[in-house]
Image (tube, rainbow, N blue to C red; front, side):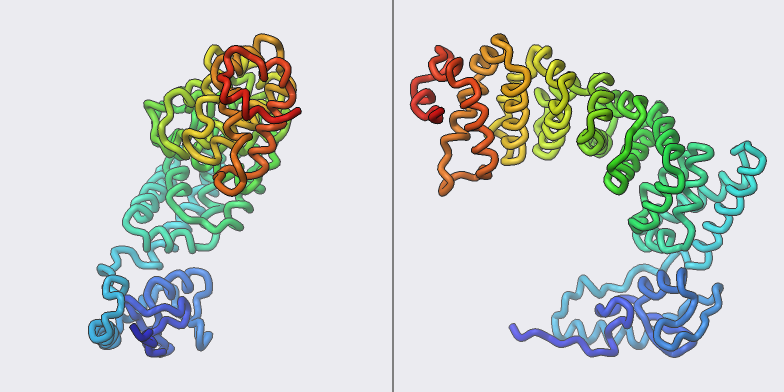
Length: 412
């Protein structure tokens, strides 16, 4: 089918896409409503002519152009679903900007009194939350208001307000805004999230976990307080009472915070290892298994983590059972965990358990895979061979190892 060229006057000058809801500014230039509303929140002028646009002005719908676009799309069978006119907006940019200003002003006033029970602040937050919940368009408008992240984070840090936390999690805030807010509030923000994790409200705990995940992804080199790991581990224990999103966020935090020694030990002391092992015995979702094994791999980077794993009655068996069963990622992580044990925790009892639970046999199968027909990476296969060579004397002739596995055991 010949590609259809979209007429230039049907294209929004901002998004360079076919307009769905064309609106015209006093300058005479027409834009798609979604793009121009977000632009005016930050610039306040026409993008093409640079003429100022009053804050309270609403762009005029261009009904004639919209009908032309629809007629043209119908004639050319041009992705009709993509140009359907959105419903009439319930929220305008002026209202959104006014709400954010109210939140910022009420937060500043409440901060001076050291009491965060301001009825004006609470009312503004709840109205802003309702606006953000209206539609994707409304959330984009709120996120585009200058200073919205600073205002909401200020409220969250000073009061731990649940509405502020919910709004932050619902918005797709630009990374630079989030990073600035994180750096500005630093440890106070972490303390506020810990307080939210300690609440009985499942929604607040989920929002706190999701925001903590964002904090760790944008600012990973952080030495977190012990209380963070205690609450994250408790969230994993309560996985039946919280959402899957909250559980995955907690796993992301554990994996993301523990490449460094101090955080690893704190997580182990919080009881993370036995909780992760228990999860591996129950989890069925692929991504959750990958995250749990990834966190366990990080924790086995310290002696305390390895000791906790071998002390768990099903620790070695759970890791070995996931090799070659869920995904390439879980296979790689499981091999890494077993290699850590073989290198640094190889007591006779541990070596025997690895053979008895079938972990050694599965390592043989992974190591023997040929590069041509193997889905595992070369690095994974090399790690498996390295692990088997470490204790070949103990394992190669083990009665727990079947003869066909002994035959493919790598040479020392």
